[in-house]
Structure formats: C-alpha cells, structure tokens
Image 1 (cartoon, one colour):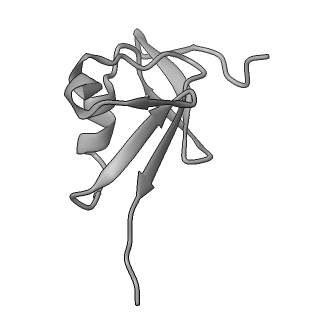
Image 2: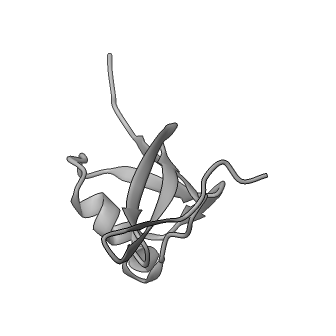
Amino acid sequence: MSFVQAEYVIGMVMVQIKINGEIEEIKDNTTLQNILDDKKLPSVFVVELNKIIIRKDNYKNTILKDGDTVEIATFCSGG
C-alpha cells in the first residue's frame, strides 16, 4: 500500500517521503545526505530508512524514492 504518488511540478518530478512522521515533497533523485544537510541536527544522530539503519558513509549514495520512510533519531543525556 502506497501512501503517496509522484507528481510533476514545472517539468520536474517530485516525490513524497515521510520524515519522522511528516510527509514532505522532495525532488526525484534526492539523496539522504541532501535531506540531512537541510536539517539542523546535533552532532550525534542515527538515520533509519524503511526500518533499516543507514551507515553515515552511505548517506550521499542513498537516493530516496517515492513512499520512503525516514526516521532521524537524536540522543540526549540527562541526570
């Protein structure tokens, strides 16, 4: 079951993905690194793509597809 469909916007293919539960529209062939570069993230975080943890050295080679689900988890400490 797909919760999204690809659209054409001014001659450009756009796809929808879900990031931390929120649907976002991105350009087709966007990499995971492109998405992370736009986020204000702490120095330590982990990324899960479709329930699979992605290694940091694979961010720039991982192209997001229509319907993908990305979870970004950050860590915090307390006392």
